[in-house]
Structures are given as structure tokens and as C-alpha cells.
Amino acid sequence: MAFQDRTLTCVECGASFTWTAGEQSFYADKQFTNEPKRCRACKGKRNQRRASEPGADRDRIDTRSTCSACGRETTVPFKPTQGRPVYCRECYQQRKPRGGPAA
Image (spheres, rainbow, N blue to C red):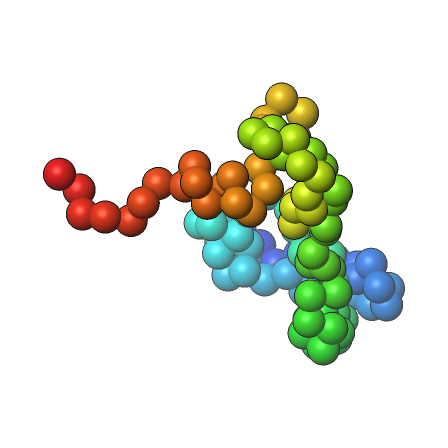
């Protein structure tokens, strides 16, 4: 497929920018399905903003739950999925496979 340069509009600043044929080919090789939404300047600013706020978009979620093995109340660092067991630290350590050599 022959790609041609395309002009897109940045969703942040509204400026027009060129999505080159080479960039389109790269996207196709990587099987990316979405076109870029931001111009190079806005993308750089966004990446800088995200880098300056470590963990801001990946804050740890502590959820209170009941251990499926012993029934004690515990806190886990994720949102439990319905139908899956949740274990307190002690019960999890007991169930975790030991790291020994394979026989």
C-alpha cells in the first residue's frame, strides 16, 4: 500500500500537522489502528507532564476485602474480580509455590 502525507488537526492546540507517509508506514508495520491526535509539540508537553507526576495516573488502589481462606479482613493493592479468591498476606504466602529447582 502506498502511503501519502496527510494533514491532521491537533486535538489540544488545533494546529495542523503533517502525518508523513513514513510515519503511516511505521504505524501499519506496528499494526497501530489509531491516527496520531496531537502535534509533536503537544505530544512532547503531554509526555513531560506525565513524567513530572510519577505514578499520578497509576496510583495504587488499596481495597478492603475478606480473605477467602481464613476470613480475616485485609487490604489488597487491586480491585478484586468477582468469582476470584482474595487472600491476606499470610494465606497468600502459604499458597505461593516455593522457588526450588524443578525435578
